[in-house]
Image (cartoon, rainbow, N blue to C red; front, side):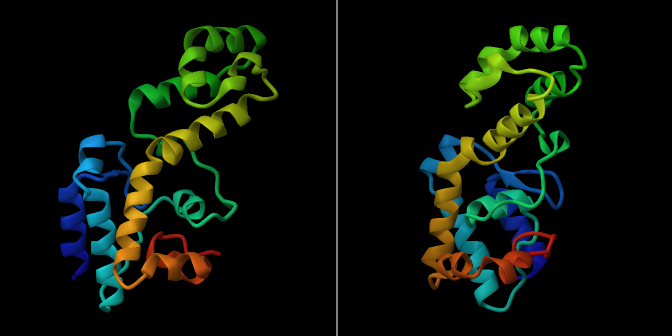
Amino acid sequence: MAVDELDQQLSNLGVFERKEGRLYFSHDISLLEKGKYKLAGSFVAWSILHGGPGFSRLHPTLYDMMVGRKTEEDIQIDDVIDGDVSSRLNMIKNATSDRMVADAIATMGDWAANNGCSGIYTMTLETKEDKIRILLKQHLFYRCKAEIDQFQQGLEAVGGFWGMVVEDPGPLRSLFTSYSKY
């Protein structure tokens, strides 16, 4: 399967949110129920195991989290495609006074708490970066964990490929991300 053909097949499935070279999974229950994430994983594994290209477009932090490694790279607000999410995160980031932090908490505290950041209500200028990091991980990884699991099942279904990746994720990183440092 050629690079363009693999990209086209995966693009047609709609399982990724696009940010070139830093893709992450879309959160779509309909696609999940239809097994599209598993199909995408099978396409990638089949391509790699048959001498074709890898799929070096995943967000490097997503890959690290998928294989259970401590990530070396921070997720950036610019990685988020959803305008509402990035706007809320920027509200926290741009807070430069206690009053602005209080306004951010009042405006989007419930949203942040509902997205796994229960400590948002005690956020300070000193802890705002930690809250952003938690919310970015939620958006990139945890909100679509079922989709990621299904993608991994697809990788595993073709020759047990995912098991090989998890066993030695460093050297195989370049097959999934454009950042080969490990």
